[in-house]
Amino acid sequence: MTVPLRKWGNSLAIRIPKDIATTLSIENNSLLTLAIIDGMLVIKPQKKSRLESLISQINSENLHNEISTGRSIGNEKW
Image 1 (cartoon, rainbow, N blue to C red):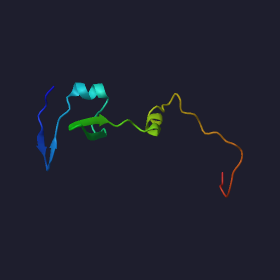
Image 2 (spheres, one colour; image 1 turned 135 degrees about the vertical axis):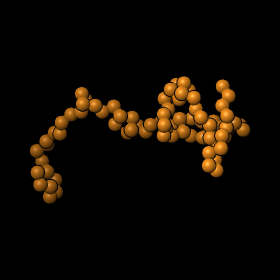
Image 3 (cartoon, one colour; image 1 turned 120 degrees about the horizontal axis):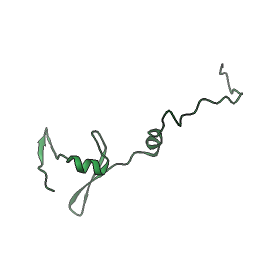
Image 4 (cartoon, rainbow, N blue to C red; image 1 turned 90 degrees about the horizontal axis):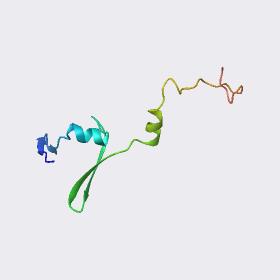
């Protein structure tokens, strides 16, 4: 696939076609890593951090209530 390189302010930009973005699971504001390897530009999507990945899976079905341990440490008032 060939895409044009366009001027964007003082930089250059390419548009990523929707089918490629969907295949790579990237969307608006996704972070990408750029590297030059053997004279080629390589663009890789950054994976979410483990914490972000875990938090994104929280929903009303797997969210538990607070648990009281019956003890306080320090000057907390309950």
